[in-house]
Length: 115
Length: 111
Image (cartoon, rainbow over all chains, first blue to last red; front, side, top):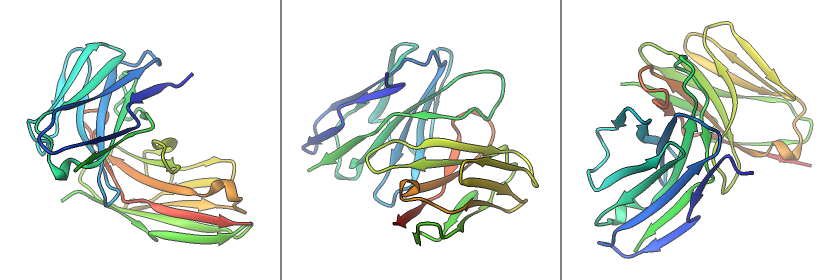
């Protein structure tokens, strides 16, 4: 069973469109994240979220919004897509055990191409 | 500015040829250093966490070490299946996912 799964694997769309990426984890973790891996291969955190708190990286445009219907799901909505949004987006999760350095479990990524 | 730099960007080894990957960091208040492995088309997979200078961790052919300014990932007698991109990340505290990643070292091991 896949621990963190995200769909779709590939997403090709036109500028200006609105799209969503779905993420589900079956690990029972309390915290989920969205990371962006750009063309230079740097992974950067966009959001971290549990059922109590949403933490947003201040560099993320407000066109991006996470939506969590329940603890096991964290979807990413993107409005008015721009060329610069093209990247690979990774969902991840981690448990909360009181430690600040829990390892992350990543999904396999969604490659978004904006034309 | 907090920064993580990995070197080399790419490394080609023959099977059995041992080597090391470097991760240097300039951060204030390191709360942990992580190594991840990333295969093409996949998400990063956790390898190690190091918390303090002098700490070492091993897993199969991999050994990670940490000093106050850098970490090394030593690969002993690598096999072709060790080919992947190895990512280093540092935790800055606060949110658990608040990691700064390096660009990675792409390792290729030829039989």
